[in-house]
Length: 176
Image (tube, rainbow, N blue to C red; front, side, top):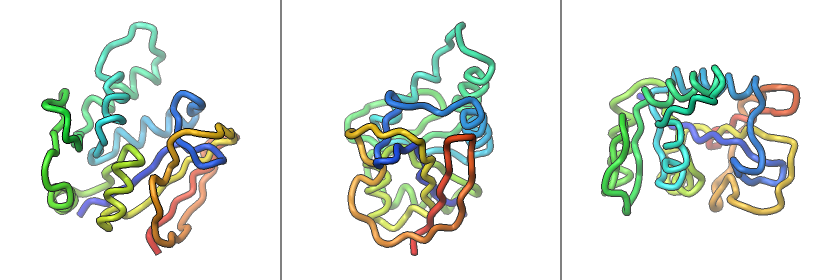
């Protein structure tokens, strides 16, 4: 059975904003490895549309950016949306029964399946489907934006802390 993991970069004041701060080289390489060994990823519409950037070739990309794009393109993706009518390569649209679709997905795979997007993560949290939360804590304060947790959630238990580079710490939590 697969494990559903919600992990994102977060500011010290609790926000996720890929435009306000980004991973450094060591953390970016970590993300390449994470995507490369992942069993797949579940996206909300907004996050999926942001990540579609990696579907296109960009000649100015570094070797690491090219490696991330290659890993992302081969990654099986499931996109939860009521508005999209189609999705890109290696992606499946989930339109109906979210709980049933995700339970079947977890039961039919092994390994980690990433969850991308705070609103989707909140819905999956309310259904009791997220097995682990990974906060990549960056030393920035953005003051506003989308919070990592889109709503209240029950108590969590810290299971690991990892220094990811000189400034970023990964905090790993599971439902208590």
